[in-house]
Image 1: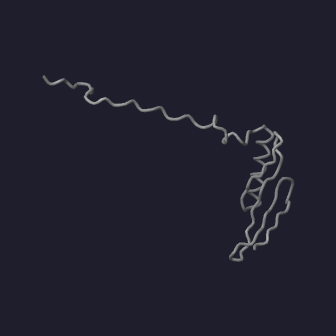
Image 2: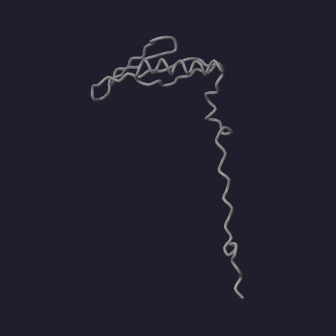
Image 3: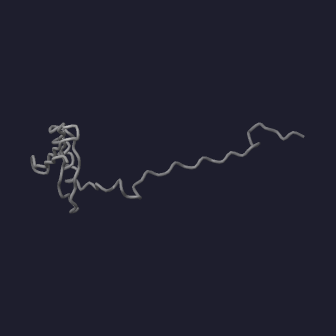
Amino acid sequence: MSEKKFEQVARHLYRRQYQTASGDWSTLFYAIFTCWDGRRRTFPLGDSLAIARDRLGELRNLNGRRFDFDADKQIGMLPPKAPARPSRVIGSHEGESAGV
């Protein structure tokens, strides 16, 4: 069984370290905070501390602007379907004459 460590690096920034089956260590960073609507959120931020800090800043800015993190999960927010192609009627091409 692998050993897991989860520790706070800074406010809302956490590091998770674990040992893989091959014996290597893996480190991942997460943002964990309560957003403006009161829901507890956890976002993966990558394996680089510098990038994780930047992404955390972006998430905090979105949260400050009351971004809806669940918008992509709502059915009403899906992109509209492409309009149906008109059906093609055989024998109705322009310039075509009915052979008599």
